[in-house]
Image (cartoon, rainbow, N blue to C red):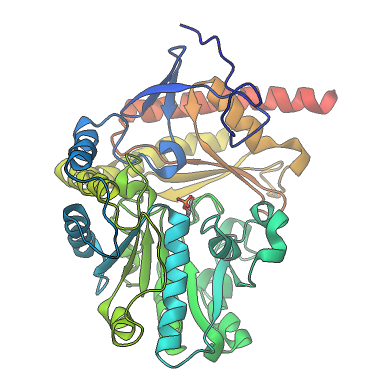
Length: 456
Ligand SMILES: Cc1ncc(COP(=O)(O)O)c(C=O)c1O
């Protein structure tokens, strides 16, 4: 049944994310699949924006939201607490590493990052060290789109229009071994070993640095770059020595995406503050969290009395009910264990992509993978930005019924094309093979289109 309406600007009343294309209208989801109003079927190989960890169409999570909305949909988080917030906080505290056991709920990853950075700053002021205000972050890296989160993000094209409004966040080169001069092979490389953080802290003066924020495994801004085994032990040790709070931004990698609840777990370190988002409610409601230990919150409790960060919908009962139901579903269906088991299957199948033209690297962990496209796999030279290779690939993938997530600009701030694969944890081996065959079709079509564009 084809839709008579064109869902595109300016025909529809929706202010779309892109004003230059038409949108398929999705009417249903089930497992790893989405269906539009023409009955076209899409294999959701990125869980949308790395969100749909449990899969689409889980009735018991939907029922939990509706049951909570019937009981009480909203209470003001300043005056009241509520059952789902209490239950979810206890669950997340138990799942979080070390002493991280107090949970503040918000709606988006950007909000959680803003709140985590404010918490770090407020902590130092209330501890009598107000000079500690500088933030350090990895480059490339991404922490969100609100102003402070964007300031901490090294993704230039997101920042360009708003540059005059962004605070100056000091950058530490990300351990992006594919593009590091050492190729990830030199044990003493400051970038790949983590000691570059110490150089940056010394440059800023430790007395001025409040926090270092990092994604434990890169999201789309580095295409699932996985730092070496000792990287975060080095980071932890440097942060401790210089009294710098280490914030692990697990908005994308948390909730089991890399095969362990937290992507930091295999490194054996505990951050001072952690952010979660995306997968903790599986997309059934917007939900994010800031998790911090008592040793930090006690300073606020004895001083000002609370985090100076208020939002109308923090600790919202229905969004927390979505989190409770999603975490329960992950546990009851052993889906994080399943993600750990299916990760090697995914990465095994994706190895075949390396034989395809212009596929330079495939990397990642668990059900998180990045595929980097290059003009020349020998020299790793990126495509010219004007080729719009990643964007064209994503369009061709959609035509082939495959959903992947693109990123551009990671190679040198302007050039660089990659796509991310992060399917729901319920994916089967057969569906993984379906990703690979659709990927091949999409790449053929991309090459044909970019060749035509070049010769035109
Ligand atoms: C690591 C990381 N932090 C923060 C965010 C921002 O989350 P949101 O888009 O929900 O605001 C993202 C989003 O992709 C992310 O990947």
